[in-house]
Length: 330
Image (cartoon, rainbow, N blue to C red; front, top):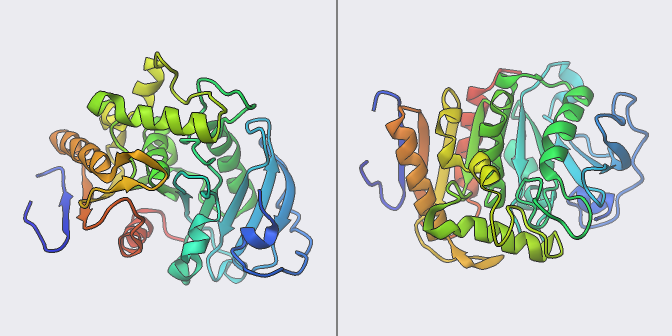
């Protein structure tokens, strides 16, 4: 692959707990939300306990669910013409990374409304825990933290029931940053028929390499931030079957016939919320993953960008156009 300064990129083909105001990203106090539309309500194990539907595009909901020991939230960003077009839309599930300040508002703080203005796609941005790793953990000492159940078995069908979506493979994409990029890769493989496009922005793609560095990252961070000493994958002994089921490099065939988009940084630098891991570990995992995809003849697009473990908005905007191009048209 030729190098394009300052960015390396490639495309391989088969032939070669917050207020509603904060949830909406506002700095001040919002007026009370109007009554919810009748179509938006409880279901699939979710009971709506808080909402704000005052913004014409960004809808906020918070749920009580047996899957999680507290009430997780979600922002649902609608297309500009959603209320007037009558059209059905594809959906992007967009996952935040880890850290004590990480939550479902992350992308709204960065500017997701501006990035998606005029784009014919619904963007769903749920809570994933400070270090939930988009998983049902092996153990928890602080009540249920079953993020995989919440996202796949509850939230996904709830979205399809309450918004005009294409409830089908070609109607959904999944993407994320850091821990969320791992979650995207994991869900796309594990639930093959749910997502036609998957994007990992500096998300780990190889759990076992370097003596299980990413498994260690997941176990230690979740134990400290989310599980009160519990772990995602088990310690000192791993749940080996669970690691294998979640490990992108062990699920290569599950990415066939999907759009796969990968980006990682070349500048090293520690992960800001877990100093024992650097972007070098993520980059090495992406290169391993890319090699396996290429050897299997599976199409994928990859980028290596200057800098460390950060979310790169210009690359995401390129990715977003590719997502819309791959999914069923509104």
